[in-house]
Amino acid sequence: APLALLPLLLLLLRPLAAAAEKEEEEHEALQKQLSCPENMVPWPEAGKTLCQDFDLAVEDATAFLKANLPPYDRDNEVTLFGEPGGVDGLNTGIAAVAVNMSLEARMALPWAARVPRGVFNDYVLPYASLNEARTNARPLLRGALLPLLRNAGARTIDDVVYVVNGYNASAANGSLWTAVSREKIYFKSGQTPLVYDPMSAIAFGYASCTGISVLYVDALRAVGVAARVVGTPAWHNVTANGNHNWVEVWRGPERGWSFIEGRPAGQGESLDDPCDKWFCNPAHFPDPNDTPVFAARFDRGTGVVYPMAWDPKNDAVPGVDRTNYYASTCLRC
Image (cartoon, rainbow, N blue to C red; front, side, top):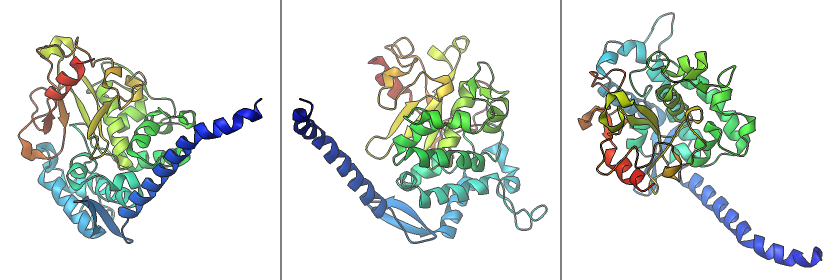
């Protein structure tokens, strides 16, 4: 009887095999489309791939960062970018490292090559998200995460987001939260602004929602994924109700931005279902909505500010107003 069922089983599996084969073909075609000669950086533009000399790409990326430096970073420009000769012969800085590593990721990782220049400049390239301490976390994060991504067979932006967060089939082999710290990083409320830069979260082994989000964003950027911190400075615009921060990820031109929490602050969420986040519901976003939401960015030309609950008079972090998106999306949950 089991042998008699074999033809039926093969018939049922045929569409799955065909779908897998099609996905593999599309993946290979995309890799070929986005490939460039050695030492050239790929940029998707108008359905084609522009290949830019690496040194010229470094110049462009550095110019963008310097043109949009927060006021409190301007006095530290040499510290951030370095200068010829430098101290003890070191002629680079944290921001310069971020420039080089983000462009190297574009040349090496297929999902990174898909990110368009504008999204890249704001959400992959920057060395910081908010006003957290500036630290050289990117080499540490990339070194810890690339082996995890290779072992998991990650090929898409979604794959990377889930593997880094530990939401994948091979999560037992590690994630961001176990790979960079001697003990598993966990959520601890009330830590911002004491512990919210990546190196502090790694050193202490914990952070609250802001620190978890900043670390998750930095980790994704370190492996070429466009990500940003997003949140509300106050639920229902009442300071006493508290604030909250989470993460948005750019999933490609077809899907745009989706949101998720870093695993220590989350509950096993997905990128596809907004309603599986504890805060995405009419209780937090009623009709009419009174909860403001902003995402942080680096480009200072928008005139929008990302408000920081721990530093309410500081208007130095540019933002994107995401209030309408969350009001309409979470009201349906």
